Length: 83
Image (cartoon, rainbow, N blue to C red; front, side):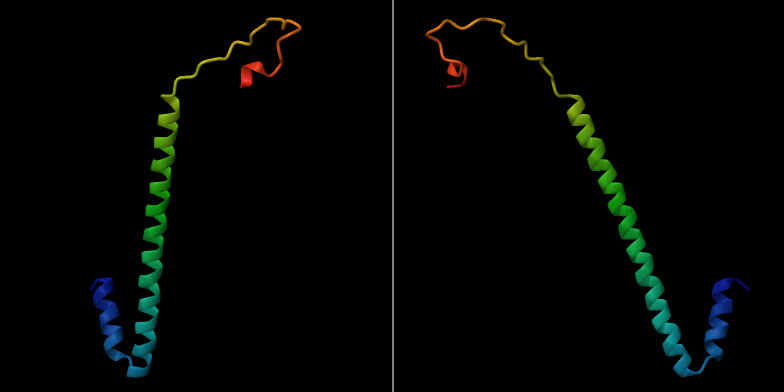
């Protein structure tokens, strides 16, 4: 006799009030299992998104900005390059 058959045999021996409690507990177990499945799926999705982001960032080209070392004349403004 497997577990399913043993449980069914026990359920058949229970009075109706206890069957109601078993039914509620089964609903609880099913909801808990569904929540865990959703959480695992969400974690997998989040991991995939981070992986895609890192791959995209790794493909970005990076150029270094070389500072300009030049002196300003007296008539040049310091902020001229920013306008």
